[in-house]
Length: 457
Image 1 (cartoon, rainbow, N blue to C red):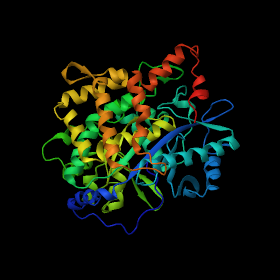
Image 2: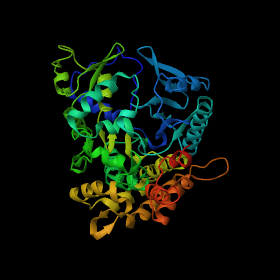
Image 3: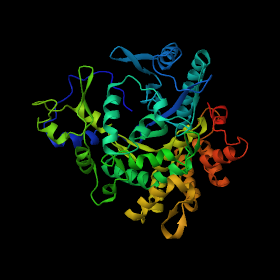
Image 4: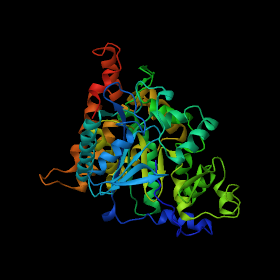
């Protein structure tokens, strides 16, 4: 989640709804300036007893952040506490229970993305060896209760933790017990954004299936392959979901702005602190009628903050975020952006991907989204088929899209090799969670703690 570093006192005051719409248009870039921004989270645990370290304990999260400063990162503080880092490779931030996230820099190609991931993982592993902590690549804590997890000292999280139980049953699980891999991608125009948004939403369940990696809750199988994805189904209906309006004729920046105006607020950030505005209306804020800041109108900085508080399967800011995947190991961190870059950054591939999904109805898209967390690639799709029946076809489209981009490294390799883990999943027929369950019921003898030895970075 977004880490604020400073209030922008010079940000333009919003005088009209047109400014909100123009904000999205400001993200348009020609294809030669499209970039790839990869985000990935991992669980942090003590190597002695597997507990999740608190921010302030010896060898805990604060100590981890300070160790990384030695690699050239710059600390970011909130209320006198170090809660993030910035540097050439983007930013390092903390999720609510200390999940450790790299939000990577905007890069030209997947070779750079995977190298960035490698640098980050090497740095955190070196720090972890000093501190006695390890890092786990899964979509959900396999063994921790909510009560066993610490809370990071970030103001927005205190507001969200209070608000989540008011609007859903699993929002606290989302905040405290999950990890994801995401990629942020550019668009050239409003029409290009709309097509990418539609393909991204329709095929997000496929990404969820291919990366499904959260089959355990509190030490036992939970009946799901991606419990992380299931959690989103009852987190907060006002700010999650498959956004059916994206598929309506005329969808564009204006319609998404209206959607965001209907998403209830969480907070306003002023002078280094978060003001609780949970459940209040940004429309009232536009009129200067926000009860917690009477008479004050929002700035574009406030709009940016508000955009970060919606959590649909695909999210629009001044770029598009693909949000459907569970956390996982290094190879899948590189594979997630490869999938979406292959599908969305080549026009022929984008057209071919749209051809796969364009006839799916709203009901069929939603039914697929609802089925995938339990069934993975066996989820039913239109025409009496299963998701696995189109998975290989979609990967072939992504492969062709990456080949057409022809971005090579020093050895002359293009980007298609980053799809290899996904091709292997489709060929083998089992998503990562199914492989974990096989080991749990087999070699692990029902001992989920074995995951720390086998799924750590």
